[in-house]
Length: 228
Image (tube, one colour):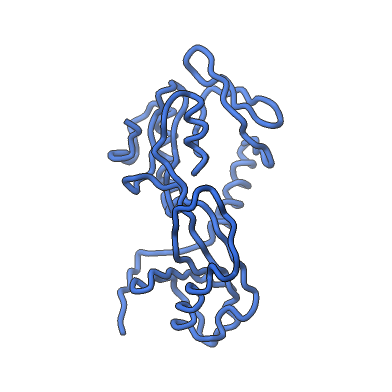
């Protein structure tokens, strides 16, 4: 048995990061519209003049389309197509307290295509992806193979308490790269299609979108990420 160790790799909790980022943005004056559904975009004089929501319109000078697997639906209302489609992914989060020697580092079992990530007193396992439309329904048996392979790695105690099942949709593109670009509509910018790497690429892609909006040279190349 053996493996490869990469000292530059790291892992973390995307939920904690996002909540901390929201707090930072709010402290700097951002208006966070939570529990608000986007229902459409109002177009006027070749630009998006407002974002329509279930709680009324929000006037806008610039709009970023970043709705994951639902981005194409809104793009179609403006007359262009986004090559983004949903791929269903599964994860299981279990208590690390069940294990005598829980992993201290995240890793990937390449043979079984199983990824694992320590998250404080928990361990998150991910594996399996399927094209299944927009359904996120799942049953415990959908995770049986994943748990079986994980127990072969970490012992039979894994998952005996505090188990959480989850399934969600990854916004994939044919190339595997996200789309970070201007749209055919002057003040609408695109940042979508990150697949399972959304958090990994979030900061760099956000920087590029800010550069596009500010009409500045891109801090990173978006070669291969253009819409057209």
